[in-house]
Image (cartoon, rainbow, N blue to C red; front, side, top):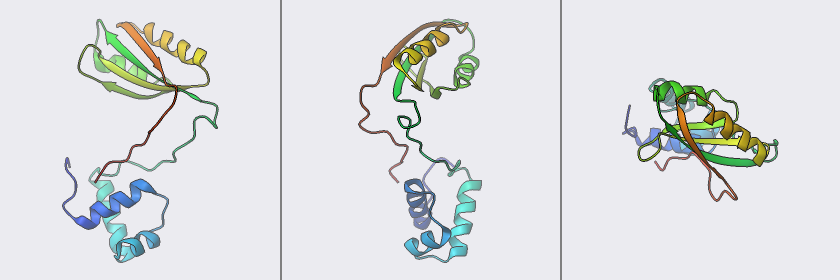
Length: 151
């Protein structure tokens, strides 16, 4: 793993699945011009080799009562970054935790029911032993938010 599959049919299959993973094998077979058994085999191989890590629905946070998106930059003064990042990742409102370079150690993305709720989350992070500083940024408007890769 580590690079785009050489097989152009597998690349096309990855493109098709990442845009809509709910399509049936029959639909994918027709779109790619391959037998259903070949499409099924390629999907299983891509899953086994780790190119496909899972399938999930993309939920609308606003409709579900989580209209506030924010980012928190975290600086760690002491302790293992991985242990602290795992603790932060276990918090339900936290969607992403990234170990980053530069002046900060972690970049955290979270969704919350309100700005006040996001503030409580930031305070919770600041209270974790080893976290020395956390700066928040609330999103006013999202222009693009997707996980598609340009294959």
